Length: 167
Image (tube, rainbow, N blue to C red):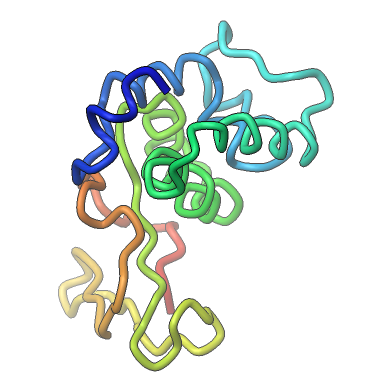
């Protein structure tokens, strides 16, 4: 709260704040139960028997900043975008992406909204198809909003074999 006025209207949340949230385990608490211990350094420990109630307490406490835009900027990556990787990604994908996001080192984006479907994932028409030479995926479709898209970090190694791209 002491620094909120200095960054709340900026397009990117402060990196040092994200790093502090990561080190405190707060970003990890936003991914839902169970606590992601296998992707965090041993010194970052969650509450014993971590469950949805602990996540609720974390979100409630963060909400005290009184600015929904700032709260979303800090929490949407781990709470909605990273959760997809954490719950459904391959183990190699998780090991590559999850720790950096949980520690506040990188921001992740979720690109599900489409003009004809909004955020209704059942109505999505975008596809990801392997290129003819098999070296990468080609994403076909139109996105309307990409949560955190304006400041998410690129994944330098992209989607790999075994990952589960949108189909």
